[in-house]
Image 1 (cartoon, rainbow, N blue to C red):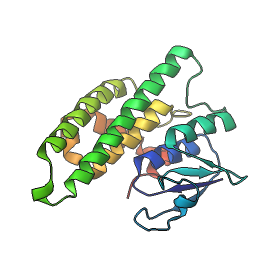
Image 2: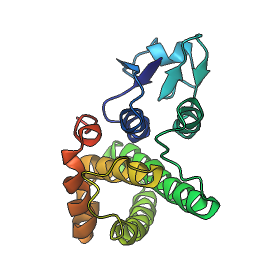
Image 3: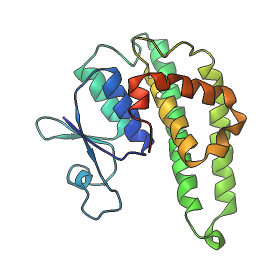
Length: 200
């Protein structure tokens, strides 16, 4: 299999962490999304990443679908709990983390406009949403202790790391209110799946 990704995409990082946590071998191909003919376009008409190309040449996208495919392909170790209540809770946190990614990306794109073209209202609303969601993740992370040596991370934890890591990369000031969440994230850098996928 081959994964098309960028080094900074939180969506791709979520999949990359999952692959490493589940010990699934997969080739990695970096793409430049600004290029008119980047590699992912051949496999996803939207040109978005991540895209997972299976051994038969068929493509799986987006990140949420890729994660589900990996669980089907290699059920163990599971990163999504089998217990129904625990499963829903894990997927809820994944969705919240995904919302942080989406909103932070929107904030970054708005920030890239020249100052006189930026919409202050859009920026403030995006900031407020991210801060509210980070507050919830900080509460969740309080229950996730001593994970550095855990057998496997679950999807809620993986998605949280990807989301918080992206905020730390693009809008670090957003994390100033959440020292416990930041400390939790840094404590996991001892895991190879986390350190190897850190955005650059």
